[in-house]
Length: 98
Image (tube, rainbow, N blue to C red; front, top):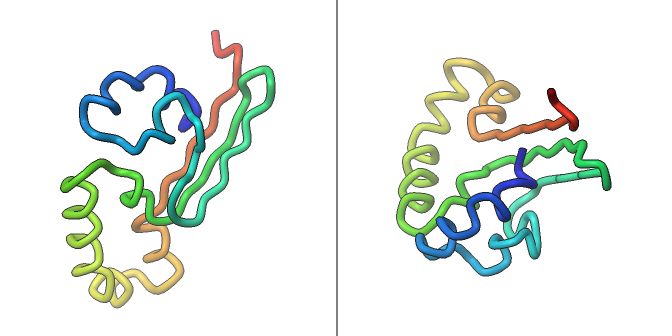
Protein backbone atom coordinates (compact mmCIF):
# COMPACT_ATOMS: atom_id res chain seq x y z
CA UNK A 1 0.00 0.00 0.00
CA UNK A 2 1.12 3.55 -0.63
CA UNK A 3 0.62 4.57 3.00
CA UNK A 4 3.61 2.62 4.33
CA UNK A 5 6.11 3.99 1.80
CA UNK A 6 6.77 7.34 3.48
CA UNK A 7 7.34 5.70 6.86
CA UNK A 8 8.99 2.37 6.08
CA UNK A 9 11.17 3.63 3.25
CA UNK A 10 11.65 7.22 4.46
CA UNK A 11 15.44 6.95 4.84
CA UNK A 12 15.81 5.49 1.34
CA UNK A 13 13.55 8.18 -0.10
CA UNK A 14 15.65 10.85 1.58
CA UNK A 15 18.92 9.30 0.34
CA UNK A 16 17.57 9.17 -3.22
CA UNK A 17 16.48 12.81 -3.16
CA UNK A 18 12.72 12.44 -2.81
CA UNK A 19 10.56 15.49 -2.33
CA UNK A 20 10.28 16.23 1.38
CA UNK A 21 6.50 15.78 1.37
CA UNK A 22 6.94 12.07 0.51
CA UNK A 23 9.08 11.34 3.57
CA UNK A 24 6.83 10.50 6.52
CA UNK A 25 3.73 10.91 4.34
CA UNK A 26 3.45 14.66 4.84
CA UNK A 27 1.38 14.59 1.65
CA UNK A 28 0.41 11.42 -0.21
CA UNK A 29 0.11 12.66 -3.79
CA UNK A 30 1.91 15.90 -4.58
CA UNK A 31 1.55 15.53 -8.35
CA UNK A 32 -0.96 14.08 -10.75
CA UNK A 33 -4.41 12.65 -10.17
CA UNK A 34 -4.75 10.06 -7.50
CA UNK A 35 -6.64 8.99 -4.42
CA UNK A 36 -5.51 7.41 -1.16
CA UNK A 37 -7.84 6.62 1.73
CA UNK A 38 -6.62 4.99 4.93
CA UNK A 39 -8.71 4.41 8.06
CA UNK A 40 -7.39 4.92 11.57
CA UNK A 41 -7.10 1.12 11.81
CA UNK A 42 -4.76 0.88 8.80
CA UNK A 43 -7.17 -0.41 6.16
CA UNK A 44 -6.66 1.45 2.91
CA UNK A 45 -7.17 1.76 -0.81
CA UNK A 46 -5.29 3.91 -3.25
CA UNK A 47 -5.10 4.52 -6.96
CA UNK A 48 -3.13 6.80 -9.22
CA UNK A 49 -2.90 7.41 -12.94
CA UNK A 50 0.60 8.16 -14.20
CA UNK A 51 2.35 7.08 -10.98
CA UNK A 52 5.73 7.49 -12.68
CA UNK A 53 5.42 11.16 -11.73
CA UNK A 54 6.03 10.03 -8.17
CA UNK A 55 9.29 8.28 -8.99
CA UNK A 56 12.51 9.93 -8.04
CA UNK A 57 14.84 12.04 -10.10
CA UNK A 58 15.99 10.95 -13.52
CA UNK A 59 14.47 7.46 -13.19
CA UNK A 60 10.95 8.88 -13.01
CA UNK A 61 11.60 11.30 -15.86
CA UNK A 62 13.09 8.57 -18.07
CA UNK A 63 10.22 6.19 -17.31
CA UNK A 64 7.59 8.81 -18.17
CA UNK A 65 9.38 9.63 -21.44
CA UNK A 66 9.64 5.91 -22.30
CA UNK A 67 5.93 5.37 -21.61
CA UNK A 68 4.94 8.50 -23.57
CA UNK A 69 6.84 7.25 -26.63
CA UNK A 70 4.82 4.02 -26.56
CA UNK A 71 1.40 5.42 -25.67
CA UNK A 72 0.04 5.63 -29.24
CA UNK A 73 1.29 2.14 -30.07
CA UNK A 74 -0.29 0.70 -26.92
CA UNK A 75 -3.62 2.44 -27.70
CA UNK A 76 -3.58 0.97 -31.22
CA UNK A 77 -2.89 -2.53 -29.90
CA UNK A 78 -5.24 -2.76 -26.92
CA UNK A 79 -7.60 0.21 -27.22
CA UNK A 80 -7.89 3.55 -25.45
CA UNK A 81 -9.54 2.32 -22.24
CA UNK A 82 -7.04 -0.48 -21.60
CA UNK A 83 -4.17 1.80 -22.56
CA UNK A 84 -5.17 4.09 -19.71
CA UNK A 85 -4.34 1.23 -17.34
CA UNK A 86 -0.87 0.98 -18.91
CA UNK A 87 0.36 3.69 -16.55
CA UNK A 88 -1.96 2.95 -13.64
CA UNK A 89 -1.20 1.93 -10.06
CA UNK A 90 -3.64 0.56 -7.49
CA UNK A 91 -3.06 -0.76 -3.98
CA UNK A 92 -5.12 -2.02 -1.11
CA UNK A 93 -4.44 -3.11 2.46
CA UNK A 94 -6.49 -4.81 5.16
CA UNK A 95 -5.10 -4.93 8.72
CA UNK A 96 -4.62 -7.09 10.62
CA UNK A 97 -3.45 -9.29 7.81
CA UNK A 98 -2.31 -12.34 9.74
